[in-house]
Length: 101
Image (cartoon, rainbow, N blue to C red; front, side):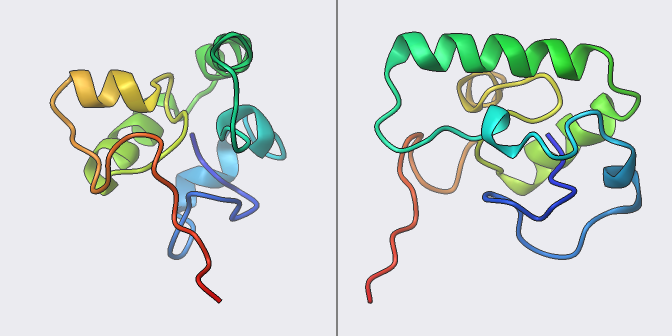
């Protein structure tokens, strides 16, 4: 999932292909809110999968997420699917960085 608006999950400067993503402006569809229920996650990820299916940069997006250990739904894949394909997250699935202020 590309984050054209530099939303949650994306660190660093945007890549040129990101501006072409079908997900532009749909950050909430690709990243879960805190304490998301399993049924809500299934619905959100189904919608994300639909958006990705028609995206011209889906492969670039998926490869980017795999290479950079991204969280959220990217390139037609969930965190669980990337993990199952052998692409490990830096922190366990579901763990989010918290501001210790």
